[in-house]
Length: 377
Ligand SMILES: [Zn+2]
Ligand SMILES: [Zn+2]
Image (cartoon, rainbow, N blue to C red; front, top):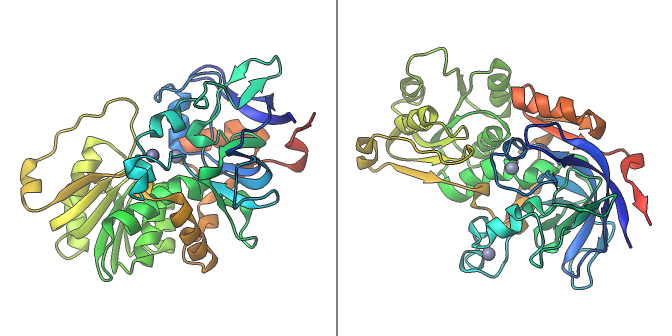
């Protein structure tokens, strides 16, 4: 069975994604076909669309997809047609890091998430002429009304959460929340600072409250974002442009420095600010992804006082374990995903992309109407 889908296709870097009809040939035995209801736009999609991540073209991006399973391959167990799911990143589940429960650092991650093809070189998608369109972006390529995902990265959702809003859990929200809950693990009463209040930073703020942090300092130049962070649980919000030395301001607001800092910007300036805001010893997690190499200079003297600087991908989370936990927190009202999201119908993808680039929205989610879903032939 071949399915037709509407997909946002990237044919050339730095050009708008174009909605095209694509074909999804028969899925393989370890794959699932998902009818996408919503897909978040992550900054990594923008970086890839600009050519900052090596990925073969033409391609379908999108790695925060959620929807309903339409079909499962013969070897798939535990998932069935009709199941609502959110899609995470892919991992091999066989290498040493996967076996240690750390699939974010899977040794086969590059091929599985950035290869654009299956292991045998075939693509999950073709255009209407039968020519290859690269899929498998983070094991999903979900900026399309149907996505082929690996059964390894599909996580079943309870039926009482809005499936079209769940996609961002699979990357941005998992990254921010996982960094706090899996990596930093603050003890109740701790102080934490979060630099950069996009979807990653906002989820770090929400997770900090879940962990029982008493002081949560949120830092971002945009007033609307600082306001939202306060609503989501930050205890103080600071603008980095209103002061000469934002690290000093964080130390002042936290009675001498924070125990933990999370930075989601990835520039030398912000990494240094985050490190300098720590009370010794203290740990700073850097999450911001920049295109290409990103060398920076930091003061070794800061580290000598017991400080730790660590990088984190995807919140060091196993989506199969961590996403159900986040969904539970969402249902309890402690992780209100809906407050971060603005939905755009797929035909307004250009508006959604520019609202993401400008920072006007924290998390844009593209949605598909029932009549966008293509058909079967
Ligand atoms: Zn992402
Ligand atoms: Zn692996």
